[in-house]
Image (cartoon, rainbow, N blue to C red; front, side, top):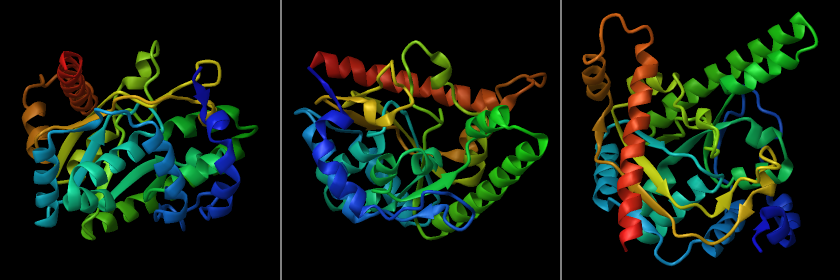
Length: 301
C-alpha cells in the first residue's frame, strides 16, 4: 500500500526541521532565497528512492543548447509542466545524474518562481522547498483568497499593498538573476494539475510578461510522477502519496521568446479581446503535444 510523505519519511522530519533556516514570513527583504544544501540532502533521498529504473532526460541536446545560449549571455527561461512538488527536485536530480557536468551547471543556475505558501503554510514544507533557490512571489490566486476572507476594507487594502511590495521586490530579484546568468523556471499553470479539474492546467495570463522579459526558453514536459495528490487532502502537501515511478523530463528545442510571441500574435485577429491569454493558451497546447508524444514513446518501450 502506498504511503504519504508524512508516513513514509516521518523519521527524517526532525533532522529536516533542524536544518531549516528559511524565513517563515515573506516580505520584500527576503524574496530571493538561496538553496539550503543541508535540506537538499533529504530531498535527494526522497527523489532517489522514487526514481524508478528507466527515468531519464529526453532531448538532452536541447538542454545543452539552452545552457550554451545562457552561457553566451542570453537570458534564459524554463517553462515546465506541474504535477507534483517533486517536479523541480526530480528535474535537478536528473540533470545532475544524467547530463554530467553540463547538467550540474544548469541545475545550479535554476531559480524557481515559487508562491509564498511554500514558506508560510507548514514548517516541513518550507524545509523541503528551501532545498532549491527560489524567488518568492505573492500569487494572484493567493491574493484573491486573502481578499475574500478579509474582515474589513482596510485589511483588504493592506493585503493588496503587501502583494504589490513583494511582487515588485521579486521582479527586481529576477532582473538580478538574469544579469547573474541564472535561469528562471516558472510553472505556467501556477499550481499543480489535478485530474478532473481542468482549470488547474490552464496557463496564467501573467506568463506573457515573462516572454517579454527573457531572450530564450525551453518547454519542459513531465511524464510520470512519484507523487500523487491526496484527493481528500489536496491542500496538505505532506499528505501526497509517494511511490516509485518512471519519470521522463523532456525539453523542447530552444525558442526565441520575443519572436515566438510576435509570430503568434500576428496570427490572431485584430478583434481578439485578450491576446496575452491566447499566447499562453498556445504554449499550453504545445505542452500537451510534447507530453503526448513522449507518452507514446514511453508506452512503446
